[in-house]
Image 1 (cartoon, rainbow, N blue to C red):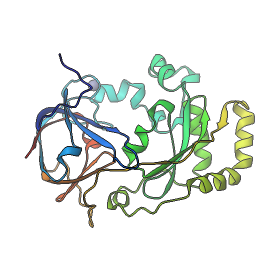
Image 2: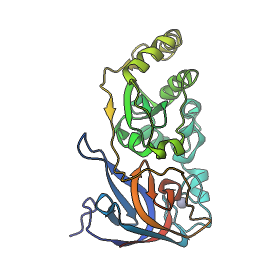
Image 3: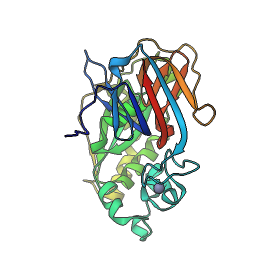
Image 4: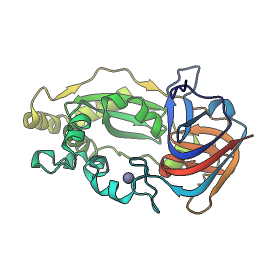
Length: 286
Ligand SMILES: [Zn+2]
């Protein structure tokens, strides 16, 4: 009987890449990484320090419909999916531009299931302080995908549009991006996220009050959560960050030195596997 949720003890696989599954660890255990190539899964933590080779076969399969596509759009979609799926619309990246109320959502049912759900506004430390939003059920996955070393949920809202409106306010005073090179160098200084939260909430007090008047007093709730610390399996961080790219060179190999965010860190450079969703690869570990 096959069990998709168990990590098979294999050292070779072939299939289209998916973003890695990352399970949170704790103070003693780093996050657990699982490489996914088609239906095959390889637990990577056990192979830290080993030689790992990924070879792109040249085929790209849309992560949604599975069709082959010459080019990948939005990290793994074929062009028809990219143009028709709600999850590929620009309002996903800019939630404050949600247009469901105008009757123009590409897939209203998908929108109801994914966007009209509780969302969380959080602070994270990936390469310094940043603000972010995500569906509540996506935590802590979202933080692990970003390579954050600390995170703190600060506000909970009723839907994605509201999370975008709140995030827009925060972006006046704090960034929302990760500097991936800094994140991968591993020398990110810890922050006092509770103090940062209090500072930012005080700075945006009037703007948040005005937004609450607009969307309803109950819609934006303050969370009293504790900060979360996230740990990654890394033997050695790179001093200089060089990136591999399957579009430029189909073979990526080296000694696996670490895993952080959706990156594999080799002694030869790093690769963001998220960027290559749908790329069919042959994986071999020695
Ligand atoms: Zn497709």
